[in-house]
Length: 341
Image 1 (tube, rainbow, N blue to C red):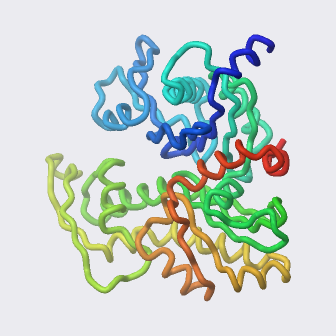
Image 2: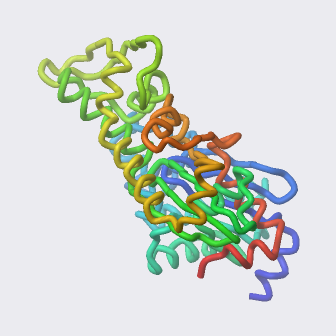
Image 3: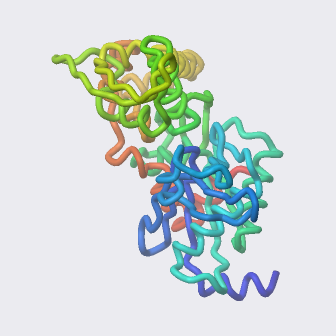
């Protein structure tokens, strides 16, 4: 332990948003230093890591049989312990720009409904990857801090963080979570819904990358002023040959109905269970959206329509969680208040 602590003096402390879709790393004094997909390409024969992050994402659906692109995080928690450890090791060393003597103190964000076993897995992965100490904060709390909400004041703050694997809805007051709800729905489920819809309607098979591109380009939660269309390419399931079809934003909206309704329902439940005094604060201040999923076009319009409350988007929804975890690194008193055991 002394060996670890000695080297921690020479390492920048890090905050990590270990997401299902992307991992972001914030280094003290330098800001965000790593922003890459949570994917690892492993050679099945040699068990060697071939690529991590962006390089591994480029291999998705394009690898030979002996190389598999693995997403070690599923629904916001570790699905593959060993691969997560290797991925963290790679990102920690990349953040420091060197591979030797790296022993940083690390703050990691996790979903609110994480079990003790899952929490232990996150801690152990970070320690094995070289951390000297590991602190765990809830994703929603980190997102609220990153979005600039006054979480230490005795007022109700409501945050909805829509990530790749989970959506975290929380009401926060006096540095504590008054109510939180985590649903295993996020950007990945939306991509899946698009793949299934196109398969059913057009007998066309598209990959994860194409589904994500469709979601970003013409995906929406509420009708806009104009109809948008997009040409997509995939494999015809009947003829077995490549095929191109044109789809509209209305079709994609239909395909996303189920995951979006689950998010709306989680927000409704949180509002129903919020104590009246804090609920009146939320009526005044509204709800703040963070996470990559909140960038789905017109999602704020839909939520405003469903709840009747003001909805605002965090300044940078994609980095809110890691920036919040980074602020926690800087303030020891806040770290004590928001760390979960």
